[in-house]
Image (cartoon, rainbow over all chains, first blue to last red):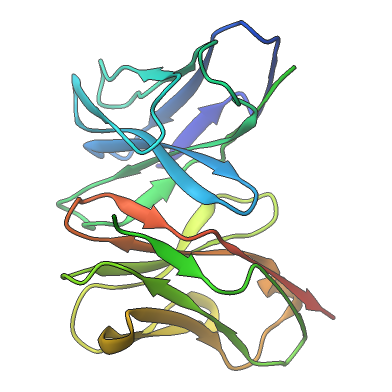
Amino acid sequence: DGGITQSPKYLFRKEGQNVTLSCEQNLNHDAMYWYRQDPGQGLRLIYYSQIVNDFQKGDIAEGYSVSREKKESFPLTVTSAQKNPTAFYLCASSSQELRPGEQYFGPGTRLTVT
Amino acid sequence: AQSVSQHNHHVILSEAASLELGCNYSYGGTVNLFWYVQYPGQHLQLLLKYFSGDPLVKGIKGFEAEFIKSKFSFNLRKPSVQWSDTAEYFCAVKGNTGKLIFGQGTTLQVKP
């Protein structure tokens, strides 16, 4: 059963701590993405990776970091430098060959920082 | 910069009413257009897409959208909504950057 998994579903952290959100896909997709979803603002792109060992900043990359050491995995670290980290984070993947432009989304992680 | 605007932030309809959600984008070149839907507690999923050809595209669950190039619009329609259509709807555009740009989202509430 192919898809994207994100864990955990809910995450709570204290201010000043870094936290890493997991994203795994078994769709054999080359590209992976991280979005942040805030009420009334839609989805905003944080980072994306079109191939293993390569990634690019999206529109709101400040305070975040990523790695892409394996095709299946694209973890996102929310650092203490992110000024407003409480949000719903969505991971997505796509295949330019199979369905160009179409992204498949995971269930999301809701991060609360207090 | 490319941008996407959804006109309605919150729409409330009764069952069997017709639906039209507005979406306008700012990019003037070749675009791919999408509508995604997020049902309560579920993943964001693709509703329909337009790449080329017939500007009237049909998606899942009776939804359709019309691409009007001269108006930079891609409005979503459904002739008769059901309670199960209650969800948040996102319009998205893929232009020359290759990235998907999303609108702010429209929350649809259908009253039984």
